[in-house]
Length: 296
Image (cartoon, rainbow, N blue to C red; front, side, top):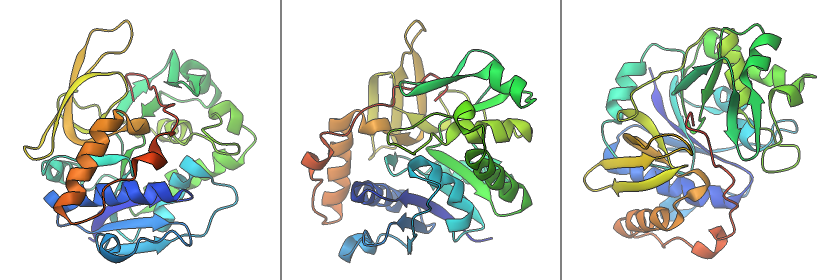
């Protein structure tokens, strides 16, 4: 089966710059193809374009904006087996191969946890009550996860997941399930997926914190991020909870935090490949709104 990585870089040209850095990190460790989805007029050019096996230009969807474009992943991917990765991630280790093998044959995989009570998706932008959603939709649990990395395989199960997510977003319960995310008319995608996965009883992967596919940076206390030695370890501490060591292969720099560390790593990758360093000025005013809960 054809397999590869997919990156969304829609609407804002800055996402293309981030996707270039992610592609550079993939090229250090991976031979699988990498595709990018961009808005018309935002196609990368020159040496940057050569980093991508396919540049897919996607027309805007009038209903699905911002993060909700992840509901289009199955429509946009050129692969039978896809690992979608957010543009603000970097790959640190060839051990990602283990996850490709581990997930083979599974229609849809995310890392997260099952939740039946308490606030879910409790970032600074909004939170939903897990018990309320479970009761409203007769869920055995709500799947709570960070959608920075999603693995899926083309087939009827994935098709049903994405179709149900689109239907919930288009339906009358949109504000009950999710919340406005960053911009007017844009909704957070994860609550929709969380309800659908729970309703279909597709549990999340719940790996130990020190052996994850995705390591996220909210609540970071200190970290080792060495892309040369494939060392990605982060000490995280949610308020009121003991510190915890997270380690893995993909780092999701949520909100580009810690920003200076991200820029340093990105510029290192760019220097190695003869590309222009990051224009820090255009990212200085990114609003760091993703102070996520431990489950993210």
